[in-house]
Image 1 (spheres, rainbow, N blue to C red):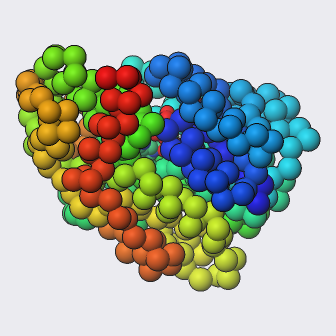
Image 2: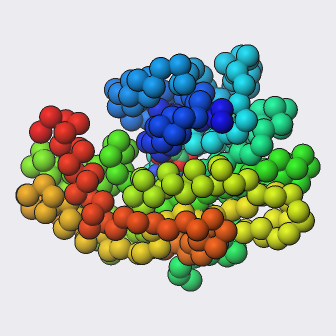
Length: 331
Ligand SMILES: NC(=O)c1ccc[n+]([C@@H]2O[C@H](COP(=O)([O-])OP(=O)(O)OC[C@H]3O[C@@H](n4cnc5c(N)ncnc54)[C@H](O)[C@@H]3O)[C@@H](O)[C@H]2O)c1
C-alpha cells in the first residue's frame, strides 16, 4: 500500500511510519517540523526513516496552508492516509490558541479535502482522550457525551471528529478517529510528563507533580498504539448503514485506544525512579488549567471490531522508555 502519513517526524507518526515501511508499504511523509519541541529529535527520527530508501519520501510543509499542501502532494500517489500531525499539548493551548486553530482545524479540513478529492480508501486520524473533559463516569466510553472540553486543544479534537463525520456523510469518505490515551515510549515527546520527570531526575532537579500527585492516567505504550492504528488502517469501516462505534451510520467510527488501566501518577514516578536508580524530589503543585484529573479508556469497541489488545503495562514500558532515553542522550 501507499500511505500518506502526516506528522511523520512526530512521536506517533514516526513510529507508525517505521512499522509500515518494515512490512513493505510505501510511505509519503509530511511534517512542518515546527519548533514546539526540539527539532533535533524530529530530524533524528526522519534520518532513521530515510534508511528505508525509496520506500520513504518526505516533504516539509505546513498542511494548514492548503496551497502549499496541494503543491507538496502534487504527483504523489497514495491509497490511504494516517493523519497524525497536529498541534499537541493541553497546556500550550492556553498560551498559544491560534496554533491549534491553524494546525488542528484548518489542517484537518485540508486533509479531509485531500482525502475527498483523491478518493482515498480511508483516512485514520488522531483525536484525544482529552475530549472527555471532566467526565466523571469511568471508564470513558465512545458513546459518552463529550460536549464540555476543558481546553482549546480538546475542543479542536472534538471539532475534528465533527468535521470528519460530515465528510463521511456527504462524500462517503471512510474514516476512523482514534482517541489516544497518554502515549509514551521510545522516541517520545519532550513536553510530556514521563520525559520531563526522567530528565529532571537525571539532572538532579526536583520534579513538578501537578494535581498534588493525585491524578490518574491510562498510559499507553507506543507499540500498542501503533498496532491499533495499523489494524484500523488495514480495515476501513464499511459503508453499510450500520451503526458504528461512536454512533455514526456513515463509514466513520471512533475508538478509544488506551491500555484500559488507570494508573496512579505516583506509581509511574516510582517506576521511573527505579529505572533511573535515583530518587525523585517531588514538588507537589495544584492542578494546571485545562488538565483532566483522571483518564481511563473503555476499549471494548476496538477489541470487538478489530481484536485490539494492549500488551504492555507500565511496569514493562517505563523501563524501556528510560533505557531509550539514556541511550539517546548517551547517559
Ligand atoms: N502523544 C500522546 O499522548 C497523544 C495523546 C492524545 C492525542 N495525541 C494526538 O496524536 C497525534 C500525534 O501526536 P504526537 O504525540 O506524535 O505529537 P508530536 O508533536 O510529536 O507530532 C506531531 C507532528 O505534527 C507536526 N505538525 C504540527 N502542525 C503541523 C502542520 N500545520 N503541518 C504539518 N505538520 C505539523 C509537528 O511538527 C510534529 O512533528 C496528534 O494529533 C496528537 O494531538 C497524542
